[in-house]
Image (cartoon, rainbow, N blue to C red; front, side, top):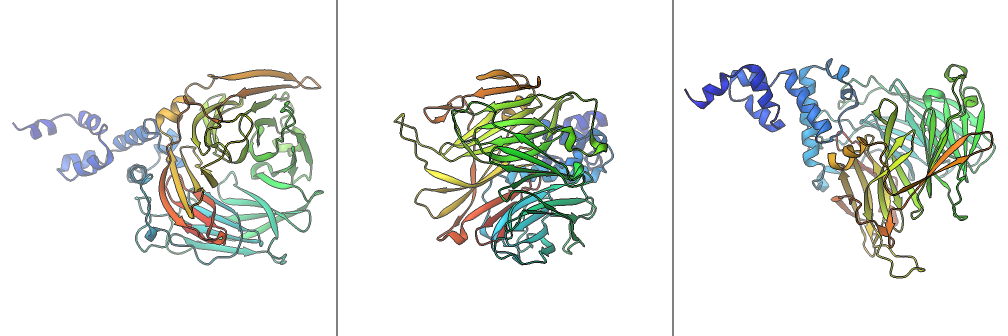
Length: 522
């Protein structure tokens, strides 16, 4: 009896267990050998095991509908296989350089000055222009490779909206967008320049289960409401459609407005003693019942006041929640990208942030909520060692834009070296040892000092401090962000300079925007 006959004589459960240790290409090859293995390769248990290994062992980003076991059991085997094959191919090609042939530009170009570039639900690319123009693209791909096919359009143009009243080249100064709770619409808030008005738009999306195609889906953009505010210095930082809330920043203050009840409330930030250093607000994000505030030198977690919520969203019996502060004493955050929230334990969740300091580089953190335990996952140094204690250090290059994936497992940044006309697109990914292992220890805090402040009225605030630099450089014991260059483009004038980036963490498609308002897809 041959070894093949002995193998095929094993019970099906044993064969499935053996096959579950194989990678995706091996399983696809096995199904070509004989009828029995072909049948086993279509077993739902096999693909559930592979997806579980991709998620927990390899730390690969997977579609949101695969995150819950109950949802997985309702997915057909063919769809599970498609998810696993796509995740394998994207993982294999994520760090591989892209070629020029796969970077066509999106046309038409509705504006000259990009204000925002974001991807929602791994499929919808929203472009907002300062002139008051909005465009939406469907960049989802039916291909399981996660890469553009040669000659294939990078996306289908869906809809364009232009403000009815022309306001010149600078109609909008800031904006924020989010998907509503049903995932059937994108809600966008834009702050006007010439008058203190916020315009809120709703972009209705087709059923998220519909597959992308060459034909653009029918999508409409409608104006929800226009809000008049008091101060022109407001910047729109965040929006939360579920509670009808918008968050603005001005200096070190957070203003939250409910466009349904027309109520507003102001939160003061930066209560710590920072030796009179500026701690302006860089980013805000709603994580009910809290709002996260990232400043130039702190990250803070403030309770969303009950008074600002609509009656159906209020919880009158809830006690006042503490305010948490984390101080970065040696870095100054200029820009930051924040992931979505993902549960870690029944009582806690985790978000990831990618912060950029002009002198020191990039810092990748995990933040546990609601304890605000901040863990440094990795750094990417852009500075040179400081040989003098007074004079500031210099940098070998700078970052014009950085972006962290929705699940915090992959990231992209655009870098230009000193004296160079090339813009380099770097990508990185977080392995199991870098990200997931830290998530299993939410209460561990190394090198962090904890203080307790009691505010007037008995409300408690917790603040933490952490040292991440040695001699102006990241500590040697900190992991390094292993970025790889996947694309380079020459920019001989400022019009071709890359200023925006976004990407789909699941499909691996990277979107770049330049100063001339052009958008291209890698």
